[in-house]
Amino acid sequence: MAEGAGHSENTSLGSGSSPASRRSFLAALLSVGGLFVGALLSVPLIRFALFPLLRRTTELKASPVGALTEFSSLTEPVMRTIQIELVDGWRKAISEKAVYVTKDGQGRLRVLTSVCPHLGCTVPWNKEKDQFVCPCHGATFAADGTRVSGPSLRGMDTLETSVQDGQLQVRFQYFRQLVSDKEVIG
Image 1 (cartoon, rainbow, N blue to C red):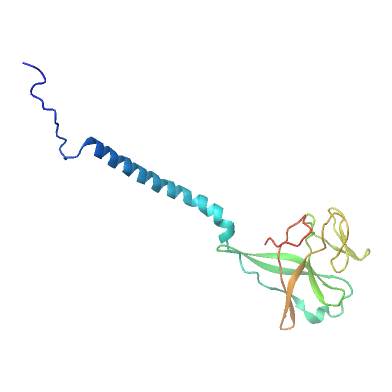
Image 2: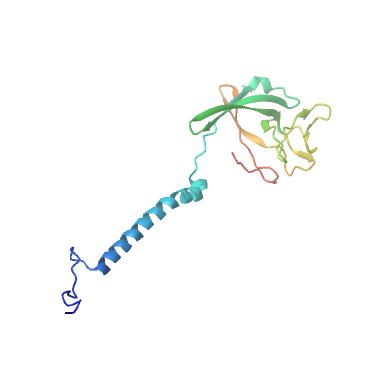
């Protein structure tokens, strides 16, 4: 008697499907799962790449500098400290910044930031020299903020102003340093 005589060549798998179709179903299931996991992992990368295009900055609010009558008879720049409300998500912080109120060649009020456009040092008004002199690298600026000498590539940055109810208002901004053009960064 032969040992394999009682076995038939056609074996039944119980479910009626062939091993090839079961393998192709598992391969399809694995590839769909891999695509799903790959898509989930790519979401942070896509958000990182698109963040500069989609970010929303907080609205720049005007800060009061003082009454217009205080600045009617200016002969030299006057320093004022303003308060800026910074909103970072749900957190609010109040920051104080020094600005200078001065007049330009036509006698109009200008508000200058005290941040040096060279490397960001705070630039004080020097009464003896009748100039703004940066203590870090010696850049000098005229009373209206124009560049006189030193390593700075441009004059002091002016801030946007408005008048409401007799009060001078200013919108504080940060500008890129080490460039010759005034470029807002925040």
